[in-house]
Length: 179
Image (cartoon, rainbow, N blue to C red):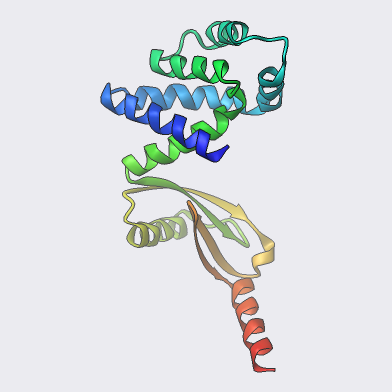
């Protein structure tokens, strides 16, 4: 599934860049993803319905998404033809990752015991930018009382853990090794 999503996302991304429509494509695809993600189960049922042929699925896509960017619509039609409509969300996530890489930006989740101030978040953003070479970071602060203290920062697949919970876990591992 992940390979399929990455292939479609890369093809769409390359097309958007080649035709200078990356921003428009991202906005359109983001809107479609927001609308479609809660309906993934229904799209999977449509993909798997043996009574719906390719033409019916393509008509469905044309009817629902007909006003979107032509290149995006073409991809959606191909998804319909290949019974891959349920992959739209995964394709969008892969496309978004390429988009963020292109713009040297990414999302970051900062977990803390309490809500952090704007100054704290600004300092964390500066640290993230230095460590990741990103130009823009979109921060979200999540409250996680299990951390006991400190913060855990997730940027993409990277995790920076400066929490008391992590310190205690590391200390416990050292004690186990000493036995």
